[in-house]
Length: 350
Image (cartoon, rainbow, N blue to C red; front, top):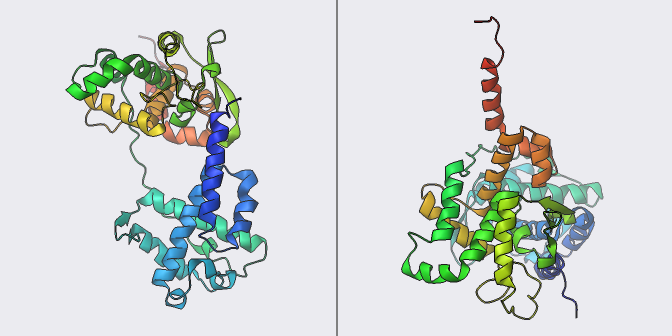
């Protein structure tokens, strides 16, 4: 029996999870999720469902007119009574709130922005369909985002990180015991992330058949369902080949036979496990930087841009749909390149 490809399996799981979430929302929300399905991924729709649940929960807790109404009983007529001031109050509510278990939840700028963006999409959909008379979300401004410093590894830190994986120095005794079993896998995985800039979700989704040493590339499924080949250099090839020699001797659990990277339980490695192993090794090399798999992706993008100066190539390799996203991330490097130009042109010969 053929295994379902990893990305299809995750999509099925997400869709089933989304269906369960929609059951907790007002019935008209089903129309919204059906309407946005062609343009969104299942993960994006799950994020929308979560954000809408937070909004409806706010209405019940903070709006006296809806205090006695269950979330499932909220109607579009109720939403037509909401104004821009109510939504501004919602933005304030999002900064500090409590869940059903009385645990405090703090949303930072980006978290608030995402929830308001979700609400704008929601209102826009029903307003365009003429199922709402008013669109107060259109009157609410998104919160201003303060640019965060982009954290990445320096060139020498990349070398130190890979050395830490190979040697296993400065690990705890418990970590050293596991290190002997996972060293080759960890080195291949981190070398792949640093040498290709692929996302952690793309990495864990790789099957053995996705690696092609003849062309020197890996076949991956990008966000939005796009399938591409990402090419790797000799360092990545050597690390992958060493791991695959070891991988041939492993006996995976049923349903995980095709997975490239396996956990110690002989199952496809999870995103959380990759995040933990990156954190473990990075803490040894650069304890003051919070390094995640995404920071390794930024490190690759930085190195590629420094070497080529081609922002469009970087955008293409990283899989950015909009080159402006790439430009925003590497603006500081662009400025450094512009500053370096000042000494390139001589006005007078010495």
